[in-house]
Image 1 (cartoon, chains in turn green, brown):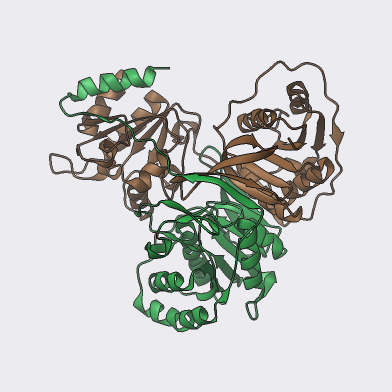
Image 2 (tube, rainbow over the protein chains, first blue to last red):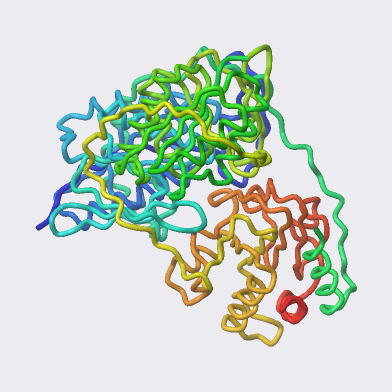
Length: 270
Length: 336
């Protein structure tokens, strides 16, 4: 028997990991220098969540995937041109900040409101997906608070696998300390899953999927409502780059035996 | 300083694990009146320790449903303890269990939460939290006016509390009706002891890069030998294994590369940021997205054939320009 899910993936955009980042202080608090000019990508953990959602939807016919994303509209459009080619989804866009200095409580409020407004969403079949971390704030708290706002109290974090059983229940593998996984069984949705990396490779670009997605992405971007995620009670005392630059000793002429002896002695030092 | 609630879940024998002891040190250093809230099947040993450390009040939620690490029950227990304590500042170690449950509790309490705190100090009578942004690329100090303010403290940032524990503490048991949950924890999957490659308490992080799977000077790939050398190194040095994204992705794509290397080993931008006193990188170029995961590795050395690799540009203390196969082969002989 197939179980159908309505899978809502929350994920925002982050600066491309290869970019050099520098903090600046603006009127609204800390930000990144030239933030709007930096090339952006969909957050890596949100990407994993999206790929897992698409994989699950494909294996459970009748299921559907939405991507709820908050970010500056122009940047979202840019990133969606690439993301759209990966897997089928319907975009729900929020025109708001994607900064790492945005507060997770306020972000969760904006995301939950957007999810509540999805036409025809059946919350009894809802799986709320997102990253358990992000490459911006790394709050690790937005999905839980969004889920609480939606009344979801079955939650999992650091998820690497979901496996749906014949009876509609699903087994979840969550990362815990020491490179181990906790195994749980949830009897039915709704549930929230904050994804780690999972085990799926990144899907190849599929232009046909891209064309189908773009039919809904452009209208979604045009409809995107302005959202704020400010918390007036949050104050950044300082934001700085780490200054540590090591004096590197480069050894070009040591034999493997000499190197091994030096490293062994270094390892044994207390 | 405002009063503080420290939340801790106990081990099966009722004691506190190292992350909780570290959080206890942080809470005591902050200086406010301390309440300790315990969750678990057995709490007396932890309560005695908390009393010896100076906690004014000890609250506990016990009972079979609260022994399992599960969102619904952990959140209910933490919420009840926070309401009973009424403390404006709530601290907890960033264990998998509390990291899963406490953000939802912050919402229920109408408070705010910050995770991954690496430092905590008193500033004008209130806490100021240090945490990193953009995957350890920049560090910020922040404060909040909203209360309760929940803070999850990363492991390895404070010395674990130690001291003499004598006598028995007075514990106030908080009654909580276990919420209906559709989730059952069925077990833990862990590698066999001799296949364990992730050791958070290891003194050495040994990182293997994609170079281990590339053609060697004889024009051939030596993956089998690479496996033996890497595993031998882990055994000899009792090291924890890390990997670069490129190597981990090769494993994930189903290629027969290093079968023990998974995404759990990945260090860097999209992986972990482990805390080890020493790190040795091999066959890895030291690109920035990987090296951000080394932020908290104190002493760093690298073995690489390229003298201009990223490690040489101020990211490592020593770079040995050499063939990692030859160096690790000899290292295994010395450490074995």
